Image (cartoon, rainbow, N blue to C red):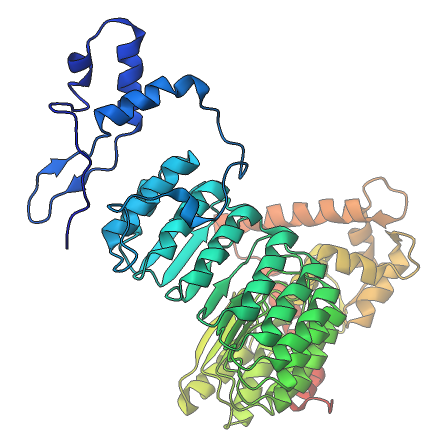
Amino acid sequence: MAEPTVPKLAVGITTRNYSETVGNSGALASKRLQLQKRHTLPVIRNPGTTRERTMLVPERKLSRTLEKQKDVKRLSPLSDCNFDLDAWNFEDDELDSAKPTCFSCQNVYLSACRRASVVTSRQLWRQLHKSSVLLDHHQIGPLGTKALAVALVYNSTITSLELRECHIQPEGLQYLLEALEENSFVSILKVPGNHLKSAGARMIGRFLKTNKSLRILDVGENDFEDQDARYFAEGLQENQGLEELGLSKNRFREQGGVLLEKALARNSSLLKVDLSWNHLRHIGSVAIARFLESNTMVKTLNLAWNGFGLDGCYQMAKSLKLNKTLIELDLSSNRINFDAFSLLLNGLSHNITLEVLRIGQNPITCDGAAAILQTLLHQPTYGIQELDLYDISVDQRFLSALKDLQTQRPVKVTHGHIVSGLDPQMSLGPEVMNTDDPLLLLFEYTKGRNLRLIDLFKSLDKDKSETITRGEFRNGLKSVGLTLSNQSLDVLMQRLDLNRDGHVDFEELLVGQKDYARKAAKRRQRGEVDMTAALSELLKDKLRMRSGTSWRQSVTGKQI
């Protein structure tokens, strides 16, 4: 491969001895040395040797720069830059449009940086001869992106371009997309975290309507709002070449989900869609789940960290019954409780193509974790090969079902903490519990049900007075099968009612929980085994037996 043409150098001039050549007297020599260092181009290593040569700016050009230095003003963003390549007046040795090479592309980039008065990114310069360019947290800005765009027009080697959090902004995106209209070799474009906002969404929508070479597009974390979804919808309806679309970490809500639904349903090329970390809830989540009914191409759908809840899971179950192409579904951290998960299980029972299901960090409880394994056991036609229940506690029922499932077929299962239980043949104890530590019953119930403390407080505060009385404690715990004696109720109120007004507010309940957690941690640290631990296991078994009916019902499911 031929080396780039090196400008004619001033004889004997190097960065080290430059000050000796031009003289050491006065401020001129110092200023010359600063400019010489500033305009020194990247070091080029000669092929086949270890010798390095520094490409210096010609003496005549340096003098001309010094003469005009006083008249040069710093360019305001895009004030003196347009995308007319003919106006750049590149020299013949800087590019060869007939036969582009990596060195000509690198020289074009260097010249473009000089003309735009931006600092050259050495990391970017080094990658221009490779098949992929990756810049992470390099603040090249709009003008730096323009220099890159000019180089891309004369490049035929780069197929993947990833500029992550490079602050290119809508102005830089415009230059980039205009270059990609001329360059049909780039098939992967990833520009997450660049503050593109509504203006950028509008440009991307127009670009998708005409582009036929792009296969992967990632524009996550770019501050897109609900109304910006229409630009993507318009582009996706006309684009039939894009295979992967990333829109994660934006702010698409209900309206955004509705706008994207029709476009995703009609698109016949997308294989992977990432809408994680948005705000898809209620009708927005229903709309996104509904597009799976008619879409016959999408194989991977990431909806993690949204708010599907009961409504979204109901529609997702209906869609899974009809969809025959989806292979991977991620619903992690979507506020899916046991009831919503029961609906989802019913849809899964009619789907044979899904292979990977991620449902972790949802309050589906131990019952939900055990229910899905029981469903897999009773449905041999299931295609699920990987099940992610990250951060979801499991019990002995789950472990027993997992062991049976592994004997049938290999399934990779990830789960959270294992809650140990007592022997089922052991007595569940008296119907009326009398213990010296009723706080254990209260907070172990909360933990076993995956409830937040505020959820427990609201469930007990029946009259909505924002306080809990002794009677509300008694009736609330009795309704879930925990009947405390009068003595235990007295102890409970004494431990929680700090101001002795006969009521427990949320702040007092929070203090009680922290005190209980602190004492329990100290006991575990000392390795103590006392009756409270045994009572905790007893409570878990009691709750488990009480929820057995609803758990078995969830396996068969309800007709949707």
